[in-house]
View 1 (cartoon, rainbow, N blue to C red):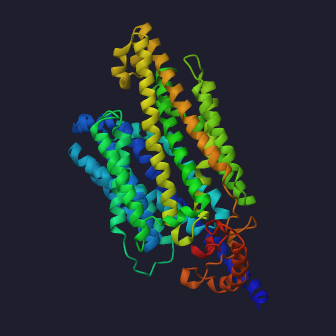
View 2: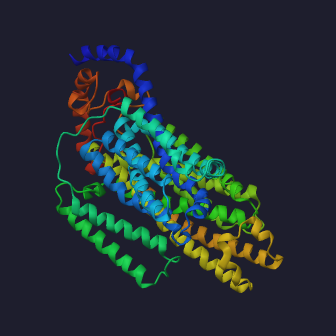
View 3: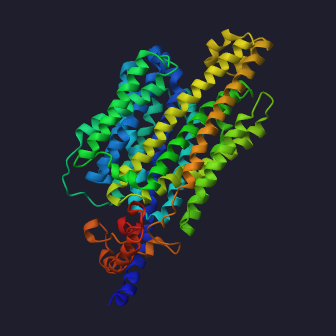
Length: 569
């Protein structure tokens, strides 16, 4: 009987393919706009900082404009993920967009530095939900087998933001004023909001779970303390100062308490059972290391290019193009290959090795390295990160059940965020130490006090001896930072070797849209094709259960596929 109904299902679904695929494209476009907003904001605002300080004052609190945003984003990331799991991803995602736009509008209207810092925190709260919401919706909307190519597009958005952010920010600030660095988010966000509201249809959560308030507070305090340690350590306060030690103690105590509370909570904010999956834990580790390396490179490469190679601030951003372009192309390629073959284990291994090789090559740069050579080294590093950025999210999502998709996505995102904080702090401390030691040895210790202001134009005004001393010092600092990065990246190589290649759930290369998933019952919000999908799913689920039963690692076992693109949208 099932064989008789299967052709009818296919015939009935065929006329809907066009409209449904157009709906998918609209949803993906909205998700890409939302991702662009979250990634672009800090890049644009960073360029406008000098103008903001000139208008509002408060130079002593300037760093808090960025820190408040980063803190709020990191602390809210796991909360947004859990809210999506409990109450529905569409509602949580739309709420995060509204919060982000409200923070953007208020930041643009700020009349003082204190107001701007507070409003940036509101903006960061929304940004935490944007990134997690995008990844979790893709995780629910698209089967893992098809997901790689779409998540590769998100890596492209990241590259666009890193390249275009400083350029767009400078242009907006020069022609429209710094307030439009925030107002520019409003029309883009409104478009994303309207598109998601009109086109995206996901099942609503009917249950009323208990909220883990204590776990939420402890996790927020722990994350906040960690981010403050990495932000203030070595800059605002010495690493061994009482304030830093207090924050470390507070962070450790909060996280230990959080782990204890999560074992008792009825609805934990981060279910600890997701870490029983070997693949999930390994992907979180690799995501942390990737964040550590990537943001450290993005910080120190422009500094090297400006101080040693004589690039302007604008051109140094463009000179990152080899790394970002390589990262984007390889990420798209990895997504396509994963979709067509269903295999992915090679990418974490190759990506980790390329990342180590790229960092080692960058550590060899000195005052005589040409821009072409450094560009080739950056391309190697970018290729490595391109193999890892979206594959880590894809495998992490494939390692959790659909009900934990939000917390799985948010945990992977949080690991990368914390990695970036640690990378910038630790690599930065090593860089500063080596620069100061080198300048002291060369008799130019006074210059390091103004190192933050020594761009290419300022360097040209220094005496030749001091200029060369500072260039050698920066080369020495970047050498130490990249050697450290390469050593840390070796951890990703080791972790990737233990990844287990579990078959990706969902459709094969002949098209996910024609093969309903096992979770397509009407109660799951399957849509018009749910009746025929249920008939096919009845046969598929039995074989899937048999395969899962034979796997020794239940968390990594192949489980029934989520509803497919056509059914969800």
